[in-house]
Image 1 (cartoon, rainbow, N blue to C red):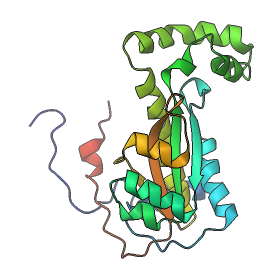
Image 2: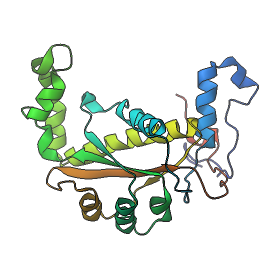
Image 3: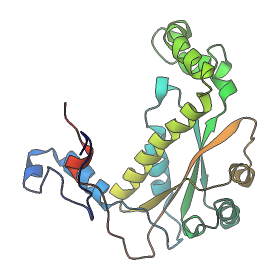
Amino acid sequence: MGAFDEPRGGALPRGPLAHEDRKALPPEARAFLEAMERRYACKLYDGKPLPRALEDYILECGRLSPSSFGLEHWRFVAVREAAAKERLFAACFAQESVRTASLVVVALARRAAAYGPETDFVKARAERFPGGWPVFREDYKGYYAFLAENGLLEHWAKAQTYIACANMMTGAAAAGLDSCAIEGYKEPEVLSAIGADPGEWLVGIVTVFGRRAEEPREKIREPFEAVVDYR
């Protein structure tokens, strides 16, 4: 076995924090772990509308998420209308989770042209921080050059939406809701379905939310020791 080789696990093994050990954690931390353990990739929903407060809560979990350089590369398009969900269903390879969800969130990321240090977008975001754009530019320009020279700007931008997606899904689980992240989609069709300009926007990830209409499946993860390496 190599340094990172471990036996494979099956159904969710208990990590190092057994229930007795969790008593040492703050209540908020215990509640967060319980939400993480509750969440799974739900594939079928009851389709009933969610209260607006819960929809806003899910989207707020996305809005408050961190992003590289604090640029908030994203825009979240929240889809509730049946006709729009049907278009997204077709664009997402006919996945029933998209058709039956109460809320579908398409996380868009701005295209590469937005991220130059001199662009209006970067200047506007930068002015919010101490020292404004001049200070921000000095810190940002080297990393921007690395991304641009290696053709990574749009990969970097889309990666930020995954952070927001994860927080929205965990937040939903904490509220007793179910979710699933959707990476299988035809990007031009998703953009068309929501009326987004493909010259300006990329699809980062699609995420669906609602209350399950299926039996919850067993959560499967590798053992803690198989994926964590302390140095």
